[in-house]
Length: 399
Image 1: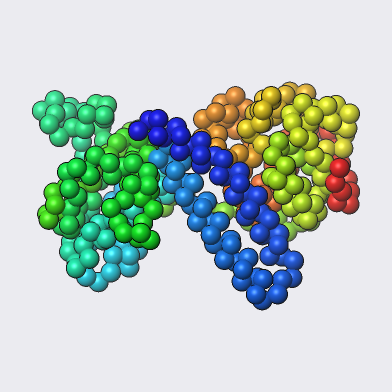
Image 2: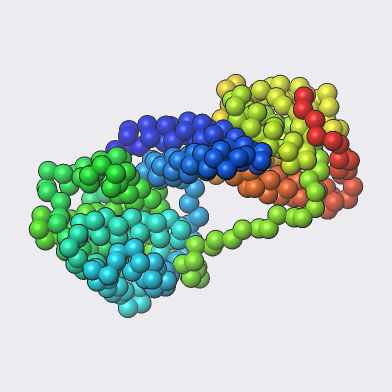
């Protein structure tokens, strides 16, 4: 499973690069005043590409390379908020019961990913009950002190500690024992063609392991299936309400201004970034490598406001380039673009929280991240008392 996880993580990264170019160019094409038929074709292509992006996120979840925002979450409150969504997803022929334990511990988890995991488990349960049935979601506390006396029920791959266990139980068709060991493998499915990607359970598995827990499944043909999700207890912090912390900063209404140095070894992605930023009103220059970017900064330092660099480049990575720019040119804002979902673990400690945008991205997201990085840099320079000034806006140019 570890080897498969490494393979799928690498595949997902490469597909994120490809999908960035596909989705970005489709967005640009959609803004070109297309005919009704052409617009419909582009919309269909966008939907297909977005499905591909969703698949890569599921692969990254399995390989434990997604970015998790771990926080204390009141799981019972989260489940209460999910009941309407679960009811509409399951349909009228399936009865849903939620039975939280009294004084359930908060879990240290990413609330958004937990919602997705529970929804995936509920959909699998629904598909196993085509004639109707019961779906039960239960929670219970598992204390480290109880591990010795309850060794038979303690998962072998789970370290001793305090956990909250979420169980999703159905009375559906069940899973034969010869298939049970394979259910967490990516793309393995017992459903008919078109009914599932085979990534739902693998996503749950990867999410649970990355969060510091695990998942265990029990099933008996004709009697149903129980999936137990073990999540670390959050200690010494106030509970979040389980809302997942969704927020979106509104983009400023002010016109874009400034000059950006785009650095990416992938010609298609670099072309997309350059075209998009020019269309947004920025002056843009290009570099194919970190070394070329540093050479250009040495020659034209006073003309750049922002360095926009890909994370994974041969010779000099984007992280190494950004570190060098922060050291030599503190007045230049920096922004990393990456197809790796675990970039925070690779670079944040070394670079001190450099802002990132993850592939594939929407052009509006790119615009917002560029504005945010520029605004942060300007605030820092202002706070330092005159360390550098913003270069006046120049007409969009490419070089």
